[in-house]
Length: 211
Image (cartoon, rainbow, N blue to C red):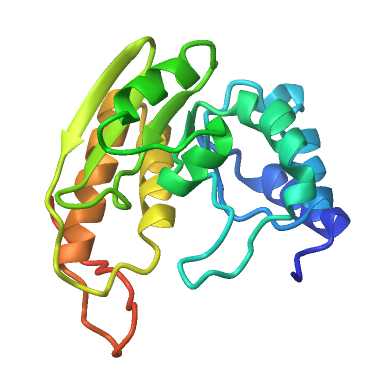
């Protein structure tokens, strides 16, 4: 697994912060433990303490490639996740977080149990459930369900990244977590429906969408 050098990454961030200060931060594929530690150092800075952070808890790609060094998992749980405003696991990633098997039938209870003492909201993506998928949001002691439909298309590459990015963008616009998550979900569904149909494999989402 080849990742950026953490020193170079931190130099890039420092350069950007001199010019544009973020209204929100989204973290996706981290790579190795050194990059994880660089992110922890970055988010510990006082000037970033009020910036909402969305963490897409991505451990691997849709194609099966590893995107995280599992030797850093305990630090990921204990040092990075508590800094998040929202995390966006899919079902296999949520199983890794909880150490349990999540099904469509027990997802609500699993989410309540896991989220009860956490400082962050959890948007559980239900695309891995059979049948019509249901997404869940745990926030401020309340559970919300988002029943959906399964769209018959292979062009779903990047859905998780798009959801987390849209959620972060909505938080940057000043939305509260429930509205930010609801609108991010609507955006991704519209982007799946509006995919350009490129290629014969798992193609990209559509960009020019309304919802």
